Length: 165
Image 1 (tube, helix red, strand yellow):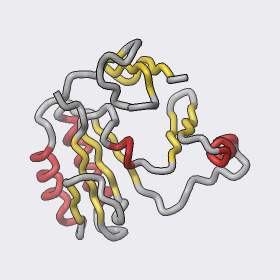
Image 2 (tube, rainbow, N blue to C red):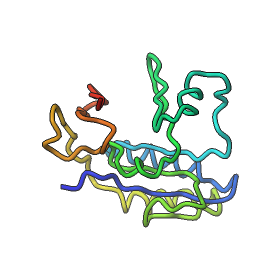
Image 3 (cartoon, rainbow, N blue to C red):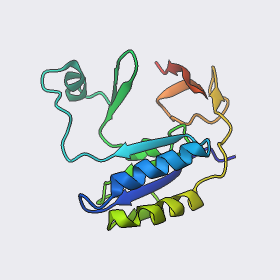
Image 4 (tube, helix red, strand yellow):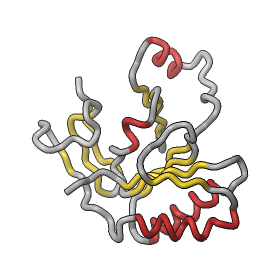
């Protein structure tokens, strides 16, 4: 069974309704019981001047995860290699107009079209949630994160992640 998520990319001018389509789509997909990730394009980097995260990136780290008590942020040079490997059912990429993230790329022209775009996204989306990925120990089964992770348990959120040494 293919566990890769459906990737949908929404592009359009500022103020065209992309975020409105994202919000409504996420709500509708979650109502179906699907797991949804959103990748938001930013034209400016986060302000990390003098911070440990920036120092690790400058030193050459491929990935830096900034982790707090209730959330984390993954810093990487390019999101494209991991978008199709996120442990969710649907990934919505907002923006990145100069880059194609897959075959489902929609140009949003007006917020008045939001309902139509949400219906289109729901038509493409799976009807039900894929079985949870449960991996432990050695890499006997497919590892959705390639080189990043040895073991991963995903059921109702990430339970345990073992790092490769």
